[in-house]
Image 1 (cartoon, rainbow, N blue to C red):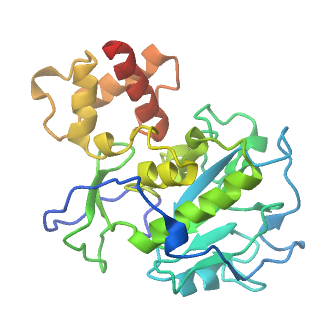
Image 2 (cartoon, rainbow, N blue to C red; image 1 turned 90 degrees about the horizontal axis):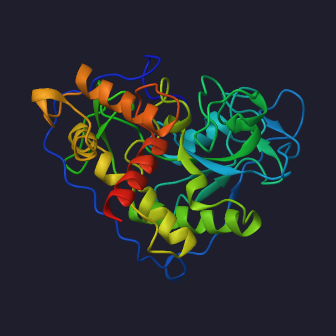
Length: 314
């Protein structure tokens, strides 16, 4: 869904209390707490609605999952905006599912998995696999499952951060945002939903999951701070899936990684201020890796950083 502000991209966060560190734990057994079911508010597969029939990818199936946040406080508001026959954004945007905050809210289903929801594409720069988006047939709305998660987004005017909110750097590194953590019940529902999707489309691998901001880094901030490692370890029942997200949530974490890989940040070092030297180091790393050198930090950069460290260790 759209970013939770009136500005088109990223905004600085207000001063807020110190936040707690993200804790990622993969041991999760959703079956013991909740069984998968859906609140159906299906969008008609008709002209004028934000849904298209069938998958047009070469595999005739989705190739990944794009995770979003709703920028709302509850599931009911997301439903009014996206779901059913006459939503607020009728014919403009949708999603396959929206995951509520609690078991009581549950999961809304707006589009069946055999069809495509219009959940990404505007301003998209990269495909699901990190390659530059040249062919529009690979926009998210045509190639990935879209999942909204109820989360108000970052702290801003009218939205005060809580003490447990997570400090996260924007894709450009120029702004620090404070994000509310996803709830325990929400995480369990996301794991169950992910298993349901992957059971139907086993070609979707852990590396095929991404946030909206990963494919639209110049325009979007959702879902910064998302507990990807925990959710993916739960979906795939695999604790060996590396956490390539948490170490690089902050500017300092990104700077330390670049320094440790031999990139020069000058006398400033890992000072938590993403300036010209930091951006230049990231661009140099991207060029060395043979990828688009745009100076933005996405999951695709994090994955390359992780691989680079693995090569150094071995």
